[in-house]
Image (cartoon, protein in one colour):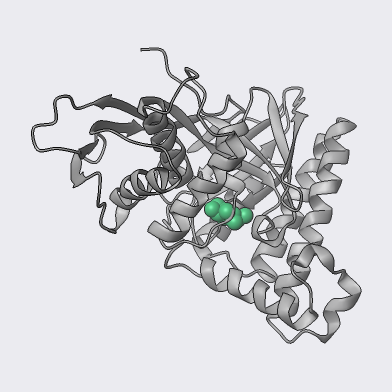
Length: 348
Ligand code: GLA
């Protein structure tokens, strides 16, 4: 089973605020191969091997204990799937893949989605080859719960939906209020998206990510709304700082997603670049999730001729996305990214 990482064109820190985002699944991701361990001599165990890390794990199906790192996702997947009513058998899992961790490409969601789909495929409840037994939106929620409860990162649904719903040459406009996922054709006409690694790794469970989420919840409480989608810029003036800045970023970021959609629809790629840079300034100055290493990376891409560049993902490190016009060569140490298919069974 293969599940891709994602790049978010625009719409950062909007998912847990019931806002809008425009990600696409990339062609790189995580592969999980699952096989049943039959007969299981010691009854109901899961064995997992992370090939690239040369690490392994082994635990009882009936009682996966919480832990840290990649193992937390494996144990979480096994536990939450069973709790959701999917019987699992003793399984051997082999994990491999080319997504750097903590680089803002959503390696953890790709891992969780690939694990859940591989485990579901082997579940005795499974009947449709290649397709999970629950609908993809419900699976996205379950995967997000694993990240929240087992890895301690209060992340939203952006990464899981992108990984599960991606399609070639397509970005996804996600409305997190209604959970409508609308495919948006990406007609790039020779323009290219490329990412550059800031070299700084983040862990959402311990970065300022959870704090940002709590600040947004506090802003909602003071405004008397259940999400920032239900308010507008005029109402933010009474909020104390830094809550005012945080809320302003979210509301204006939703507008930038709308503006980017309009620019894409009218094939104005240079206007998309402007929105990327505006998003970055807001993430840096209002949401305050950038770092010196990220700033240096944005500057490097802009000096190399990008039309726009911004940090992607939760911030506090990770990758920067740049948009390059057809005649501009991609700078060294960047990786071109293009939309690929969502999670699917790999040919053996
Ligand atoms: C991380 C989280 C997502 C989202 C982004 C910020 O990638 O996993 O849920 O909140 O940060 O947009």
